[in-house]
Image (cartoon, rainbow, N blue to C red; front, side, top):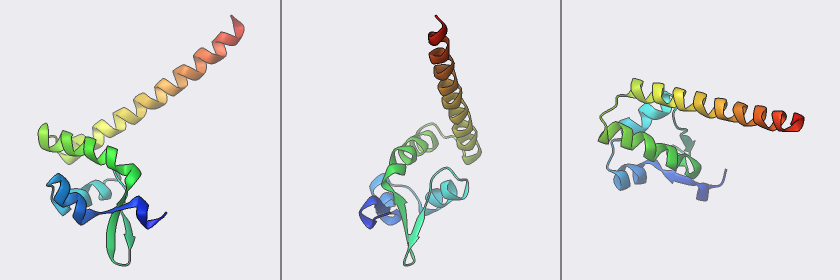
Length: 96
């Protein structure tokens, strides 16, 4: 992964007005990835949309970390079911 694809956690804290502990908690829960390069922590740019979603849920709706984990788990299950449904519809279309 290129350094251009990584955003320093300090910059994220400043830009989004969040604590470093919030980012660390998300990482420890497996909700986002943190990459360490030369003792500095970074969030991959492709994780920012997920971070923004989790930040809004936490700060605007006051959902705790356990709630964020549950929501993420349910959204993942929903996406898997939608993919499975799409595959089944495509297979069914072959027989019509």
